[in-house]
Every structure is written in structure tokens, then in C-alpha cells.
Image (tube, rainbow, N blue to C red; front, side):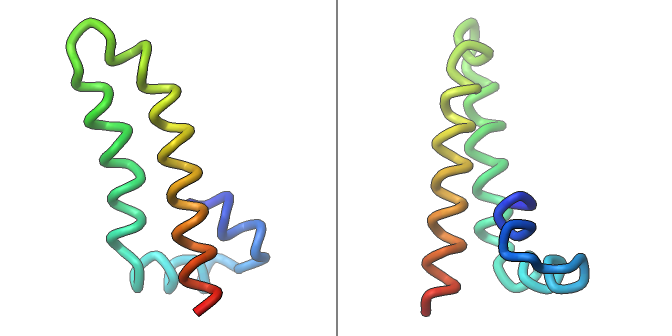
Length: 68
């Protein structure tokens, strides 16, 4: 999420304000990755791929919010 906000040239104060306003997006991105790591035996193998989908989903959600 930080990278997406940094690309929008938001400073730290603006980034913190955005994250506080959109806590669900911030939590869901990390939660998806954390849950994938809990899968026994293959969690470490699938987590990198799941994190890519999580990052893409978070970036798309941020763009959707900003286009409103």
C-alpha cells in the first residue's frame, strides 16, 4: 500500500490520513498474505504468489477510491 501511495506523491501526513480513512484496504492486503502463510506445508510456496495478487488488489482498490 505504501508504494501505491508513494507513486501518487503523497507525503507522510497525507498517507497516514488515507490509511486511517481506508483501514479495510490496509488490513485486507496483509491479512490475505498472513492467511496464506498459515497453510501447512505449502504456505511458504504459495505465499509469494498470493502476495502478488494481494498487492495488485490493493493497488486497484486505491485507484478505484481515487477515481470516485
